[in-house]
Amino acid sequence: MADALILVVEDEPTIVEVVVRYLQREGFRTVTAGDGEGALRAVARERPDLLVLDIMLPGLDGLEVLRRLRAGGSLPVVMLTARGEEIDRVVGLELGADDYLTKPFSPRELVARVKAVLRRTQAQPAESAHTPPPLVVDTLRLDPATRSVTLAGAPITLTSREFELLAFLMRHVNQVFTREQLLDQVWGYTFAGDLSTVTVHIRRLREKIEQDAAAPTLLQTVWGVGYKLSGPRRVP
Image (cartoon, rainbow, N blue to C red; front, side, top):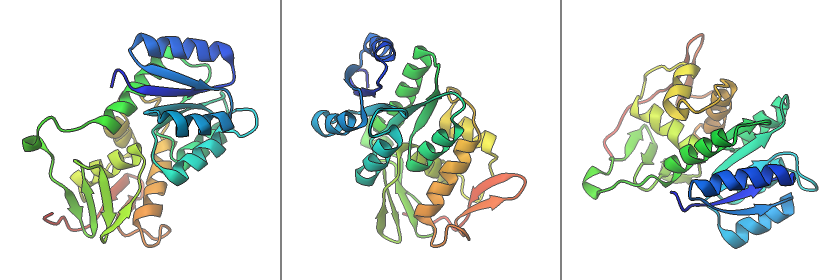
């Protein structure tokens, strides 16, 4: 993970300089882009392991960059939003951002978020004997070893955070969790604690695993409490 390549997309030179310095101190390799079009070119050319993406960019903004990236893959993204721009944060999460920070932010906190996201996306079992078995609930199948998900045999593309949330719920099928518990268990202590991110990720998962996201049968809301994944657990 230490030599992972991070693409920093930011148009303020001072912020770029500070972020790059802190990332390189931790052993990360870095490349930069100052606008949205440059970011898309850099992704295609450099194949980074993670993107630090500012929302407010000249020309093609960060949300459109994220939208185009998610149409073609699941590159991990930590986005940067201006203070008070809650709508940008919510839209970014709905588009599939893995995490976010609000400006002004601590560079150390950004590095911690980058490490946390990479741990989840790059984690591989050390030995095949310890490979976790697939999880199967109803027609939903999740394989931790290959980080793949299928529904009734059809593949589903998830972001790294969506994958971790679904895996947690499938490991605890039919158990109810509050949004606070899901933040703690799936996002960890480094997350800012905004409960709306859980709501957004639940909505995104429903759009991908439910026949009718407005009337979910798998990922259910327990009113006044939280959420649960409901269904029979099956042998892989």
